Image (tube, rainbow, N blue to C red; front, side):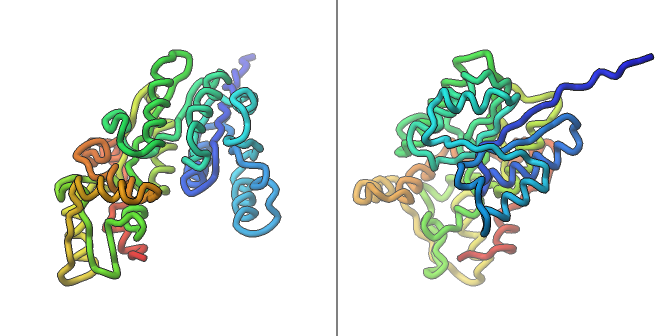
Length: 312
């Protein structure tokens, strides 16, 4: 009589269920249906796991219906050792926590994942190419992201995969970012009209992260680039002129102006981001060279996003 050997269960923990985390969870749970012996869990703060009404309760119901296990934890307030205890039962961790924990949190989480003996880690690096940007961009959290990469590369016990996404597509059109101003029918170029920015929606990031996680041959110890769109600031201006109809005002914020804005408004997160994105490298890559393009996977372009959402 032949005995079937059962595959061991692959236990995956997603940290956070916010704007990006919920999209990763949805995509991972769909993929898990095609990969037997895969179990998805999510780490939420205690106050989020006990919701009895409102959006948090709706989210909990969705997670439960998808067969996702919910565990409690506090990435900001628990120690490295405490977080390691939480992470130890898992084979892989996908970090969708964002920057809400404040300075030092991403280093702490990475150390906890390493100490827990987790086999595979997708860190919170869903953004720009921190290797190219380097230190001194004016963004303290970006400096820390580079430190996370150095920490991962200095060890050999755990596999890691970084998914570089650019910014959320919606952020480009946020009035607070200061690139697209609907009321004034103005588009501001950052640094140079030929400088570019890569954009991807959270839905596409979630879907592609799941594709990358389960891809064969599997990705190991590398950066994987994805993109919904890559546009120069000149192309963004052209896009908005087409979207709004009629002539628009175009204003270039050169490097001196961007630096000056930060100097006079040191508390302004948006001013620091405008300076960080007013550069020729590290914040954009050719869409044709991305994982999704090579795999023939469609993603939402900025034009498609505008058609669906408009500009508020």
